[in-house]
Length: 498
Image (cartoon, rainbow, N blue to C red; front, side, top):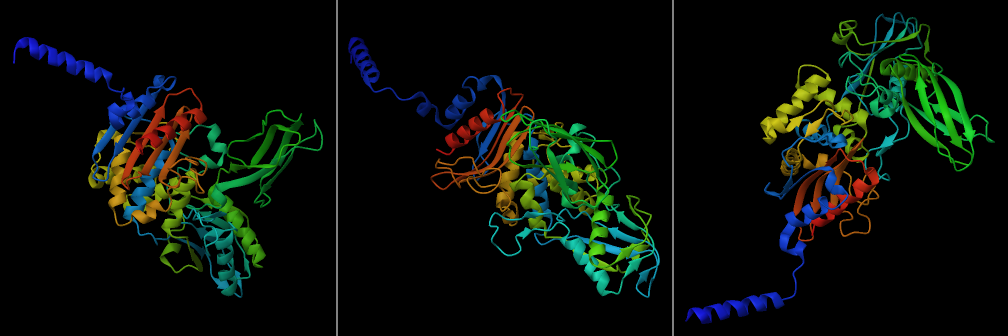
């Protein structure tokens, strides 16, 4: 063939190719191109994105800053839940016990009554599965097990206590509040103190509603009320349609609290959850209430301790009464499904106490780190954690580390314990209103995360072909607001499932 004929044929082929219908750019690029196009779309291209997607075999299908460190917010809870699910049996429980410092004589305890907790977070009012119709799924009374303890004492013949009632939270460290949490957050349920005892998430349920007219005080009440919290109402009722400005504060370290701000006229009642500074005393007060209901009088006062040696001699003897917690699988559900911070921190300290050197944040984090590096095989430079819930902005984890953990857990025999807690798109939990009306309804099982300028989502997505991908998407340093970022994250998940 002559050079002239070759040139003519090349020209004809080029003309034919140009005449073909244009192939959409995204179709040419494949998965990586489609996801890049989502993350690079204005105005989201100015924000810091981290993403990783792996298949069932752990192969990285897509990475965007996959090995770089990002603030994960509540995605941090995936770690404590996964580690506990793998290392502890699903039916594992802890006990709360009662001892007396003196003998029981003619129905009278001649000494103090000591309530000793081992870090049970389930003295609360909540459900522990999405199907709330199942028997035993929900606890309506946060004082249920305290009442059971009181009934046991009554059955043993206890009628009164001559000394004090002491809440002993020394099973965990003496540090109750994480040093990395913001001071304002310490007023609220999501930063409640973490100790060996706790009831009702260590918080008051504060309900507020507008007064009868503009300018009148708002109506404010709280439960449980054991008579020791003094609430000062500094609120007012604002015109209808105005902004809700209700807030609360307290004198540091005391039970003197106040409600302040404005509540719009005509607004529906709302409930906030206000943390109390001493969970051990709070639980002892709750126990005192249960004892009174059972007809057991306490002559002395109510106090608390975190001194692990104060009553160590008692723990060498059989308790007067004892009650077991709900099983571990029930602890994991509120941690993942509704992102309950206090449960996560209690579980982290449990890991430290059971598998490390002490019931502390430091020891719990050390257990997590050893597990992630030694068992999962995650690069040690891709994880640095400081709490269990993700409330601290000093937590940093790479997207790739999350996907490695997710795939490890999915292959583990105890995966059902972990998976049962993960929110499912369109079902009760933090994904209730996400992916609704898309093909991914009930096909995304993932954990959400959000703190200031951070939104994250990590979990599993089931594709139409039946394959299940693990993914982690983290947006940091953004200024678009949570709603916009969540919508963009969800659009990325929809794209990767195609």
